[in-house]
Length: 515
Image (cartoon, rainbow, N blue to C red; front, side, top):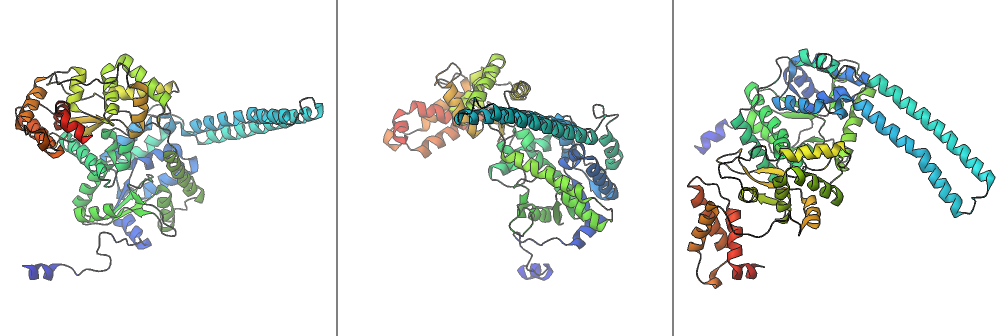
């Protein structure tokens, strides 16, 4: 049998290794432009709003030339529409112009303050000549600032898109509509989507690309977007058997092996191997700017170099913004939970309980805290978390870049859409503990109040050794798991972690020895 397998298996070469990387050649891109799949990420489409006019025209020219090769995963469409209406997308140039102008307006004031401090420090307050010179400098500076603001306003007027408030008059949609007609994949079924979210969570825990970086800052359903896109792409590639060129502005390390000296950035080896194993084809990846560069060489479209630079600068700015993302502070955490507790006390209690338990709160504890009946579902439980965050962003309390304060964790293999608990970001745990320990929101130690927990604890206690000297952490954990499984078999949801926590409170000798 082994000899038979060897006779039909192609001989291995130097590149037949999952860790190998073969640098793409122009011939590879020529082949894909002619017969392969060119797959666009959502950021490629959204860049059409954020780019300047020339870049927009050059990008659309390239996409139209490649129209027969284009394919869009359904998840890209979801993310495009989810983000399109943000002012930072549709009104990108206006928003950036306002930011720059506001920063410039502070310059004369800052300059005058600095000069006045200098005058005081060197005892020149009564020197009329110096005061007049300072006034002249500030006046000239103010005039220069006004000129700069005018330049910014003129450029924003040139690059800003009009008509985007309505989908009927949006010029980007007018181009994308016919371009992508019939070139969008189908969505996953609700069952398959739930399984994909669960698989994304599992891969994120093990830092398997793509998408694990998003789980650090986004709720699970949204963070799973990159993996859902990837799963849809794998299936489509397997269906049509064509090499894939994925064009994405995402610069995170869960998609790319970043540039290393003179070696350009390239797709993660895990992704290349998974594409080959699942679909039997090669995976290539390009940034939006690199796509225009290769299109200029291969398709003879005369793409402007400035357009390539524009897209590269957009990508670099987003990458830098990701590195300097503002996080939670003690002040923002206190204000957020104050607002949350005023309208959604249960969610506030769960956030604080998670922080009290080193960042995680299980499903059973949520039911205890809320007093929910066993048949109640937790679907939509974290919606108030986003509601309060959006309001505080409008008030200027939050920047909009803080990690979501309560994320759903999906773990059940039997029911992948079932939340097993909730997690708060690591950075927020000490802030919440400092602000709320000892307050009415802080959880108090208490015995289980519902019947499933009582039953599980009784079962676990019955199988524990009577001699305290024989108790170990492993024995206690096994007893909790067995008891939780026994109660769950009756159709009543119960967490082994919850049972273990109750056991620890009932076995003080073991608990003290553990400590």
